[in-house]
Length: 231
Image (tube, rainbow, N blue to C red; front, side, top):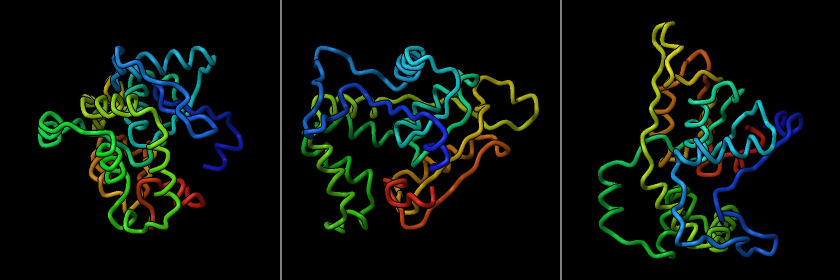
């Protein structure tokens, strides 16, 4: 990614109230009376507003996990805006029946939520290494976030809808609205077991002439941070 960082202006988009100040405290607090945006709302309303505000007419999206999911939704409907899409450890599937049942049946405390997120982001192999700086820094960052916003984000994750996308088979399929028309790349770590099925299914929906699938050894939930020289 170094050529991109050196030759393009980079904008980092955070989810509402999901950023921290330099002193480590949450920069804003989420109003519980508001409804946290869904993935579709973020892709269809918030991203276009950000691009319009910054006067951007051509972008390359780089998304990790949820970010990849939202960027894909936007790119499907706005191919003229997007030059490319790079997805790290993408979350592609909608919520499954077991996941939905657990979500509806069991309440989650803030502590338990952070534990679940850590288990999802990292493999048991990575979590067993207590001296791993990346594990410690991620856990610390989750603790510093506004916990109301984090819970609202979790609820949006657990109610995500299916991405309507299909792989083109015939030349005439390229004009279908649910075919991704831009160049794309999926990058996943070989330890990222929670993301592997999503990544492979997502890859099966892409145009093979415009997509690449890269699996990196010795990397898990934070591919770019773990293998920066290979990305």
